[in-house]
Image (cartoon, rainbow, N blue to C red; front, side, top):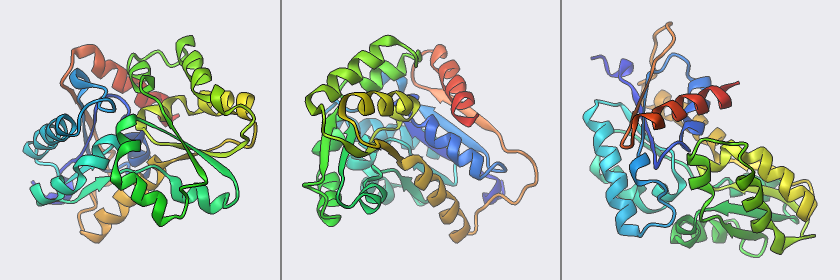
Length: 262
C-alpha cells in the first residue's frame, strides 16, 4: 500500500483518546485512522510505571502490526512514561500529548492554574520538568483525579457521580479563583464543561479550559506534511475501532466520537 494511504494509529487506555481522534479527523478528513482502546486494562493512571510501559508497548505493537504510518499516544499517562521508548522501538513518527500548561500560563501569567490529571502523570519527572521550564511551579495547582477516567470510561457522561466527584476534588480550593484549568487526561475532555461549571461555582475565576487535544491534532498534521505522508485522496477517510475489552466498549468509542465531533 502507498505509505500516504496507510492509516494513522491512535491509542489510549480506553475511550479518552477518542477526543484526540475526533480533533485529528476534523483537521484531516481524508486520513484513515485505526483507534485502539485498551479498555481491559483501563485506567492506566493508578498503575505502576512498569505496568504502564508494558501495556503501552503492547498497544503500540498492535498498531504497528496493522501497518500504520504514524502512532499517536492519545494518553497523557502513557506519554509521560513511554514516549521515548516508543520512538526508539518503531521506525515511524510517534506523536504524544502532554498537558496544555504552556498556553494556560502564557495567557494568565499572574493567575492560578489548576491541572487535573492522573496521579501517574502528576508524579512524572517529564511533567515537573515542563513546569520548571515554564517557571510555573508556584502558579499551578495539581489536582490528582484517581477515579475520574474510570467514571468517564463507563460511558454515562451525565452521571451525577461525576459531578459529585468533581465537587469533592475542587472543595479544598474554594475561593481560589482559577484563571485556567488544564485538562491533563484525555478522558477528562468529555466532561470539560462539567469541570468548568463545578470549578467556577466552588472556586470562582474564569476557569478557562485548556485542552491538549487541539495542539496534538495540529502537530499530527504538521508532522505528516514534514514527512510527506499526508493522504492526498479526495475521499473521506475511514475509522476502524479495536478494543482489548468487550464489544460494548467499541460502541462507547463510536458514541463518544459522534458526541465530540458535533
